[in-house]
Length: 551
Image (cartoon, rainbow, N blue to C red; front, side, top):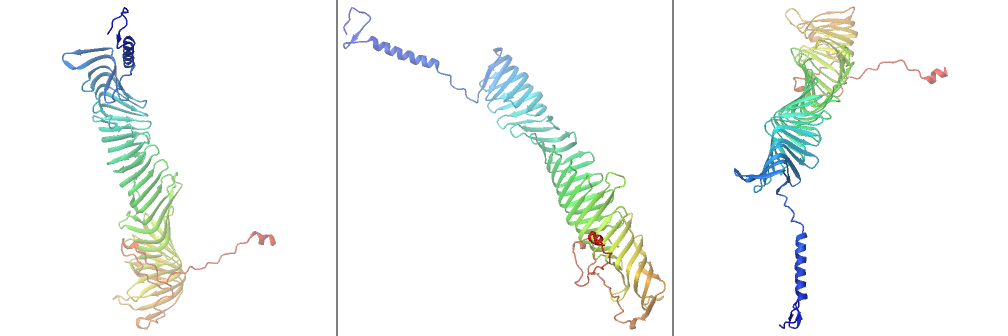
């Protein structure tokens, strides 16, 4: 290299070096400048960051902790945490916070307490003393709460109280998920609503829908209504219950049980499905079937599908089956309330002393009268009554009298061949202590009667025609007969004409008669041709307006 008089320039191989050095220096400076202006690397989400503290210092007894005091603030992911003082374990990614602890996540969740132990590795916050968790419209109060941010689940174990817009829930143990808004309560659970109180062992509750999910023995009380269930749902907003597993509805001595129940407290409507049992302890009766419907406000109820009415108010229990039962209540808001019970199609009834069949019946509690329609038959011991229409008058749930209207026939079976028979237009039988003791027959009376001598030997058959007849019973057997002027013939047993042995409309329907309470479900119709043909009653023809105008 050749040195020149200009000390600022150097030549190497005939070239000056200064511009090259300047270029290199400029490039280095530009790189340094870019490095100084580059943004810091993004903080990883799993770290807990200290945002602020008025004082920070170290203590020898806590060598791995930074002691923070005054307006302390932390951030972990999207959660901000505040307190008066804290011990920050940076290496362990955790801290212990004390005094006015507050944890905020977004604008929907806040958690406050006196002490907070937070671990950023497993995202577990343990808050102690005077704990309040607020999420939207719900507030949870407890003394100890563990909040697992990883699973978005907070749970308490030393008693807690959840309050929302309408309900207050308390229990010994529970958990709450802000994401699903589902709460689970266990042990001594109590839900208080202005309209009802629910007490349970285990309860799931959704704060968004206000729906309570019953998963353990639970009791719900509202005014005069009581619900017991071990499985089901109760909408606390609409007061509608959907209950399973033989749940129960109670109301003023009445109880309904079914495989599944639906109850609307506000509308006063109850429905029960499958193996339903409705019991009225006040009136000593019961209704069973596979479907029942009830309206509290109107008193209307209905039962179908293997429906049976059971009356156990007397010594013997009465069982009545029909395809459908309907009950109507009138003047329900007054002291003169009365009901009308209707049974439709294939009605069969059994009691040890009385059995009956018909197509349909109506019972009025106002006059205690039950009317049977279309081929009705009533049996009492060896007695059979039938006609176009039968009215049964009750007295304190016992039969007081029976009235048979049109084509009336009374038959008493003596043996397989001989029957005492009475046919007329109308007859009425009277009962005492459940036994028939007198029958009054009127209108075209025909009588076949078998008298006995003192040795209980059958004398013959007395055929009589008259306008009126009274029969007196004793020990369920015919004792004596009274009638006005009559025409008749006494036939010896061996000389009874074959056409006189039975009255014209005689029929013995023993094959239809219910034999026990299970037999009421087996419908057996009359044999073809033996059905009663309704008598045609003459009526005065109605005059139309046109005929009146013409006249």
